[in-house]
Picture (cartoon, rainbow, N blue to C red):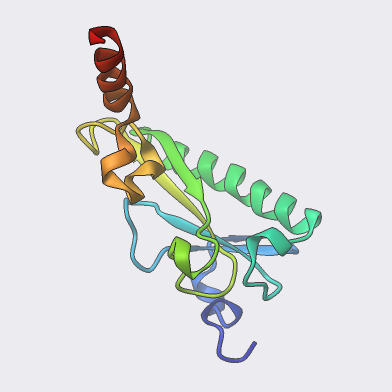
Length: 138
């Protein structure tokens, strides 16, 4: 599509690719090394990707995670995922997978990971303890 940001990626921005997907640094990174993996075919719906596209995206994710860990041994984990639909925060209507490197101590308590989209529900361990306390006090 002519007006799609991800259908018109400048070649020099691509840091890895295969036949069906490309990877670029995120324009608004959450952490250092935050990368987007994007299928070459224009498709707004993650659930409409072909099996081959899913494999291609996953292969780039594995390759890039290894490269990022090699370049920065402080990386101890990753958040990975896609926002599907406007209600889930998708702002570019072309599938893209976020690969977000994490480092020990980059957040005081990382419990809950992607659950932080709803902060009051993010720390489920604390919420589980609160439920147990209430149950035990009954």
